[in-house]
Length: 115
Picture (cartoon, rainbow, N blue to C red):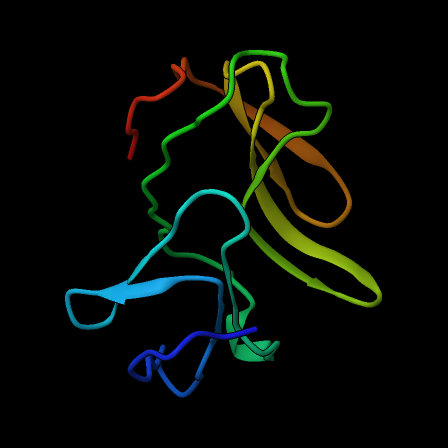
């Protein structure tokens, strides 16, 4: 279910925002429970180079989850094209390219912001 919000456009895409409140113009505010943004799939979203930047604030204790939470993913019914996950033990980031995974070591801490 989407909430009442102003339209947010990313280039030519209008993402669906689920269970969020929008604050400060086009910035989405997430409560960390069941919020996400879904952007329609397009070949223009395939990345060959560039930079992806995000802020994260892990709210779980190391090893308290049984999965690696996704920060960003390009998925459809045929599978995952690429994804970025914080490791459940808070000691790195997995980068998945659809066929293999690479890990970048990083020390996250529960309750702290990282960018």
